[in-house]
Amino acid sequence: MADPGFPGQHTTTTTIKSSNTTVDTTIRFDSAYIRTIPGYLKIAEIALNLLGFICIEASGGFAYHSRGAWFNFVAMTGFWITGILLGFYLFHIIERFYKIPWIQFELGYCALWAGLYLIAASLAVSYAIEAYIAAGFFGFCAMIVYGIDAFYKYQALKTGQLAQGDRMISRQSTTTVTTPSAYP
Image (cartoon, rainbow, N blue to C red):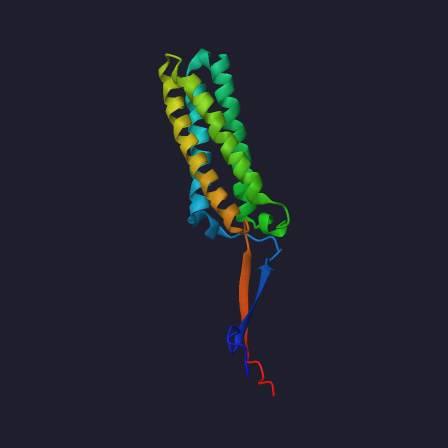
């Protein structure tokens, strides 16, 4: 007779999770990246960096003030780093070196640049020159765009996405139902 406290059968489920990273390591030009949200953000960052720089330089002799020099440092460094990253994405260099933690690097870079733009734009706006105020406006806009970019990078990092390329995650489940045999 079977034990009344033990069920007549039990189920064992085994789940196997596997991931497959698919990347194409050939360097090639692909303009499709420009039409993505990260592509739009990078183009906006480059444009805002350049506009802020031009405003400071248009202030005449005030461009060499320490506030202007700091703003220009932030703007031009951001311009070049973001431009290089955009080129890396357009030519799939990011995908070629997929083992480098690009998302973490970009998250840190975008968050740092949002903070640096907060400081630079605040200093520029507090200087009572129209060109500095215009540069400060573009600086605050760049701060927001870099912050949005950092937020998207944070989400990508939390979900385990690759910077470029595809990661396929498949799950297989195996269910086994076992019925104990009757004892004589």
